[in-house]
Each structure stands twice: as C-alpha cells, then as structure tokens.
Length: 170
Image (tube, rainbow, N blue to C red; front, top):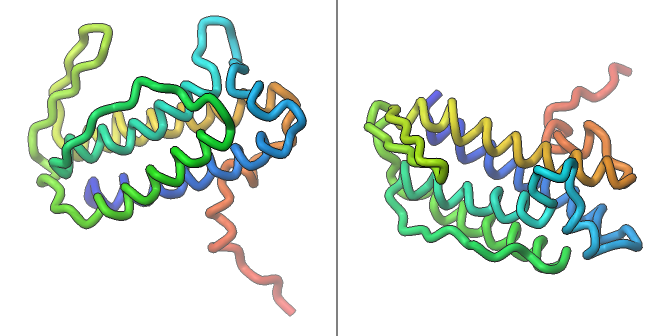
C-alpha cells in the first residue's frame, strides 16, 4: 500500500466520523457550548480539535501532493461553522486526491511548533505522523463529547465499517 492509498481514505473516513459526532453535538441542547468542552484543563477544546483535523488534511497534502495550503488559526465558533469546515475540507480532499503525490521514498521534513524537526520519507510521514495524529484528534473529539454525556459509542467512531458488514445467513 502506498502513502496516498493509506492517507486519503483514512482522512475521508475520519472526517465522516467527525461529521457524525458534530451532528450529535448539534442535536444536544447545549449545542455551541460544547465547542469549549475539553477532556482536561491542559488539553485543547472541541473547537480546536475540529480546526486541527481540518488543517491536518491540507498540511499533509502540502507535503506529499505539493498543494498550496495555509493552516487556519481560527476555531469554529458554532457547531454549524464546524460542520461547514468539515464539509469544505472533504470537498478539498476530493480535489486534492487527484494530484500526483511524491514517491513514497521522497524526503519529508516535519518541523513542529516546539522546535523539533523530523526527517522521514513520505511513506513514514503518512504512517508514523499523519495518520496517528488524525486518529488522535478524532478520538479526542469523540472523547470530549462522550465526557459531556453525548450518546456516542464505537459505531459512531467507525461508521464506515457498515459497508463491510455481512448479511446474516438465512
């Protein structure tokens, strides 16, 4: 499996998960107030998790598909704005996946805000950084909503698995 075949479906599926989670948040009477909820005081709130997830798609595509992308510094202020950002990111992903990706062994430099820099191949970047970070922040969003009493479970985290379900034998 190459980096593109791992990255693009993972991003699409987990953005779908985020859409479902945000739909459940929108149905809750607290609505927009849930965006400020967090798991722990030293962790980012739901609004930042949404921003991070949407930025991660463009950041990965900039590194491995050569697109121009500038990360947003603005957190969504409403659940509707968060949902719109996810929808926009999904549309961008559909466009970007048609770009030619660098070779899996192409050099990638990953500099993170704390000053650390990592040198890896495109395949290593996707496998060891991009996909794990994507799951981490999706799980953080899920966990925040669960902590806040929103009824979410494993089926809400992996709704895409329903396409693989076997019909009961008759």
